Image 1 (tube, rainbow, N blue to C red):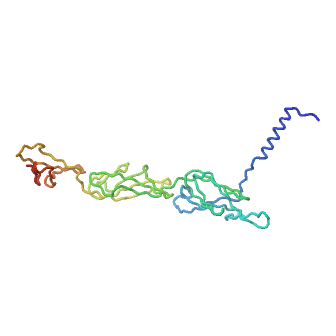
Image 2: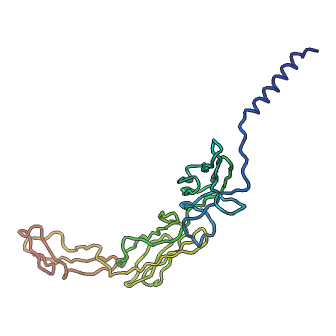
Length: 287
């Protein structure tokens, strides 16, 4: 028999090693096409179709495509004398996006905690199946206008904000995409930033409109009452220096929140730091 050359011998060794390595590699279990994972929603959201969203909860289980029933598999025991429960083992592609509440392998609850694509795998000794789906952000379901007060002094402004309530029971301030309007434009006005300006005494309905990602228009309406203008400041005028024995009149002028001014000399209460130096009467006469 002819001897193998050194190069040929090395080639044979390499081929043998490759064969051994391929034999040692784990074989991926094929998916069973006769079964599928189904998600049964635990919440109702009739205006959102079949969308899956952050915050949603589902009962998750393996179903047989042949019978349409939930699969409760059984495996032959080690002694081949009886059947034992063959529960599914569940795994998630990302535990940051969902959590699983595993009960008995068959009836489980999945809670979706973040948006993105996720894959769920169920496997027992007989079957392996998986499902991949996309989780959308939580859906904006309602809005509400909020401010410090629902009454506003004439001549002042108030910053209105809109709070959104989402399908995952969270709330957050909405700062974009808001359409503002008032029903009584002679009483108040509101700009695109939600700043309410009082114009005249009375009541005005303020409306905020926001569309969610399903193009559903959500609204919030609040009645604001504009009350009379209030005094913003009082200014005094008159002689700052008064010779002994002389008298003078001090005038008091009030400036109101709506910019108007009024002489209030007859209606203010006058006080002195030192009554030993000068005296003042109810009309502002200083002696």
